[in-house]
Length: 266
Image (cartoon, rainbow, N blue to C red; front, side):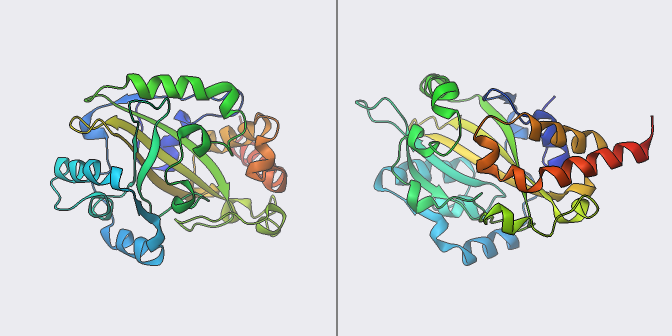
């Protein structure tokens, strides 16, 4: 099973609770980036959120290399304007153990601010993620250090939001989901999935991390994916559910999934 370019196709590959895992899939070159980006939406995204572009001096050469790989004049910002995916660059000096974020061109962040993350090493970047340090940090560091130019790897995740906005800033969950009920959950809960890929650039050795954002109302998803999400809300790590605001929407989502399953019958 490969990674598609929609919420429905990504959810089966996304983690559904329990232990944190990288969950990587090997991708071919033709599967790397979305082929039909909405460039008008990309321009609008960056116009509304110009601070989404952040670049250190260390990120300039990898940005230029990436643009050249994609046949685009310029650097990281121009590459991100020309593709659906947000783009992040990470490098590591000889005396460093972790890769650091040295460039970001992010029009549609999922509740984070690139300026706050620029220059941070991987573990600090992922500090808000419950269980990352204990369960995943060492494996990610090892994978990044061993990644060679050529192979492309991808993974997916999901969030539940109360808005279809591509740039998502989370509100206090009790406020954001106050209007959501079992009866209207299909149209008031939105599933936000990130299609993430990793590859090493051959000349500079920087690692490119891409984030493709896909958002869909709960009602538009397959019954299997609705049930998958309901099951996943029960299996989130201690503390993770609180960070995601799960308690504010879980009863409505689970009730909606149960009702949908009953309507479908055996």
